[in-house]
Amino acid sequence: MVDRGLVEAFQRDDAGNQSEALRVPIEVKGCWNNDLFTSMKSQLYGQYMTALSTSHGIYLVGWFGPDAWDIKDRRRGRAITLAKSPHYIEQQLERQQAELASEGVMALPVVLDVSLN
Image (cartoon, rainbow, N blue to C red):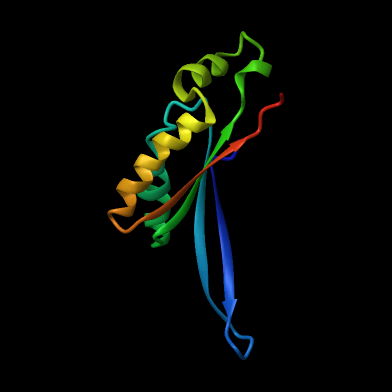
């Protein structure tokens, strides 16, 4: 899984000339990742947004419901104990979002339910 991405968009003025690029980094995590609840600040903001000199970023978490996983897969257990549910992840990340927003940083957490069931 790719752990980060970058979206670039260009605005055009009335004459159709391309202006400076808007760059928005995207940090992607699976719900089993040990750094799930720290990487919004440490990676997305601390590494990628800072390097790009941008105050906007997206923190995308894939929720893979553990019911359809092989019970021997170690990530299944981490997803159950660490992430619990998409709603739990959202609650935890909203706290981090508020903390970063108080510092003028707009990190948008998005939890995408990609369960097989």
